[in-house]
Amino acid sequence: MYHKTLKPFPKDFLWGASTSAYQVEGANLIDGKGPSCQDVKKVPEGTSDLTVCSDHYHHYKEDIALMAEMGFKAYRFSIAWTRILPDGYGAINPKGIQFYSNLIDECLKYGIEPIVTMFHFDMPAKLDELGSWSNRKSVDWFVNYARILFENYGDRVKYWLTINEQNMLTLVGKVIGTLHIPEGCTNEIKEIYQQNHHMMVAQAKTMELCHIMLPNAKIGSAPNISLIYPASCKPEDILAAQNFNAIRNWFYLDMVVFGRYNDLVWAYLQENDALPTMEDGDMDSFKNAHPDFIGFNYYNTGTVQDCRPDAIIGEQAVSQQENETVPGLYAPYKNPHLPRTEFGWEIDPVGLRATAREIYSRYHLPLLITENGLGAYDTLTEDGKVHDPYRIEYLRKHIEQIREVIADGVDMMGYNPWSAIDLISTHEGMRKRYGFIYVDRDEFDLKTLKRVRKDSFFWYKKVIATNGDDLKD
Picture 1 (cartoon, rainbow, N blue to C red):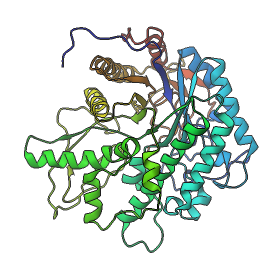
Picture 2 (cartoon, rainbow, N blue to C red):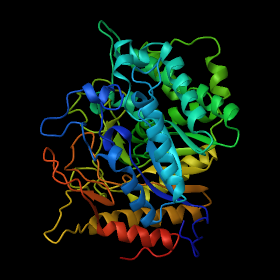
Picture 3 (cartoon, rainbow, N blue to C red):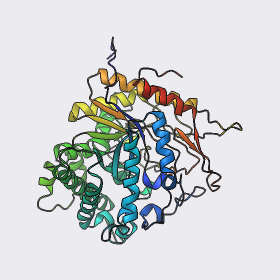
Picture 4 (tube, helix red, strand yellow):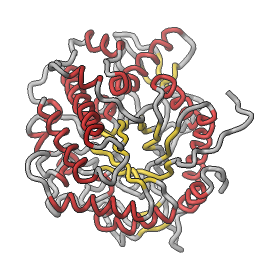
């Protein structure tokens, strides 16, 4: 649809950006914080560990002041479970409670709405020892953790997100270092989807609890949603795209919004003897979840083609934005119409519009973009500046498509790209930078940790000040 006239962004549009605790905070084992799965995993060779990251833990006041200078209306960040509960359950760490209380207050001081993600890829290591999401007790562990957050921060936090990219935890848990497979497991698919079921129950119960404890708050999920294209108009390619859309996207949103398993995914699990074991009351919990909005991370679309059951599996994915072959369902296809980033991720701004339109037409809930951004090799010049026109161009094209999708009639709440500040990338460490704010450190040399405003900082400040009207350099 080509619109004759575009609508303005809503006056209360939540312009901001995102981070996650394990990638930005540092201070990973101090002030009472316990180890998470991210702290004990083997990091990719040649990349930094998570001991210091961007040292946001000690620089949060400076960082929030810079976000305020940009004009942020919102800051989406995650709370580290083990900073609140070092073992994931049991004794509460008062210094952890205080840190996030201070962080929230610092945001509110500048009129920045905190958007809090409860779980972002950092399962407590102690809970991994007890079976992680395989253990049915994980439902109670998470709901108890959520209750503590609601009790301590519910008077100041209006917007909550449950689990970041649950679909990626399920589909590519090995890639992002979060998958815990018990010793002796004979059906990995069944095990993974049993863990997923426990996450879904925990999420549903947490949403129900939020509405009871915080009736004025709003809560949603934050999966990574990317519309899947068929490689051609060949009917078998259409079916392959439907298969992957169901498994990657609609499965998670069907459950959180409608409280039911997606039919295509259920058939896939039946085929693989992988149906999850349920307990009485699980389906009731799903029905009672009632999210207030849908948060979703978007980086690119995917394209797939038909894949016969006897297909040979090729190279496996090395990041959550790459697709793997699943014989009998789909095989990845390189889209010839899309450019790629320095790190090989396809760039598809129009795909953001297509994805948002499809989500809204299926679920009719307000949409909040919780991640979207460009990872690149940024360089600090001799005169202390960072010129990143490639990031400005990337973000401009995506924001243009958000305005198109608003004209399409989609209820868009806000835009929180990745990331507010440079942080440790899950796969490529510090060298892959996303932020509006440069952090002066290398992979292993901490240097000064000085904060430097990139060119994109000043551009985004203007975008926010004009509520999206001025997207020019």
